[in-house]
View 1 (tube, one colour):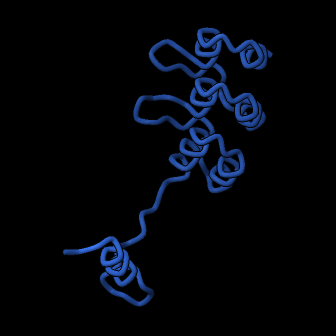
View 2 (cartoon, one colour):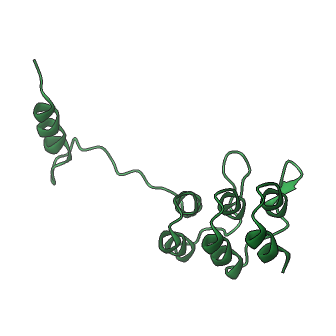
Length: 116
């Protein structure tokens, strides 16, 4: 019977430096890094993704922009950060943009920010 410790030992052996059988590192695009950072509310990671070349108006598989994600999360600090980095307030997904989302979510502070 195998235990959790057996699995950990096997994983450590596979990922040990110099092991030719180690799985290759998965590279995540700067756009995906940005989308993930915004979803997590991590401004520093979002800044790093932009520095790495992410498109401020990148789209996920549902055509949602980082600004839309931040509005949906009601994260005013992230909204301010994205706008300061020239996020497109008018970008839409299915005829609905960040302003629509903010108004529908009843987030007056973010709605006001997007209007100005």
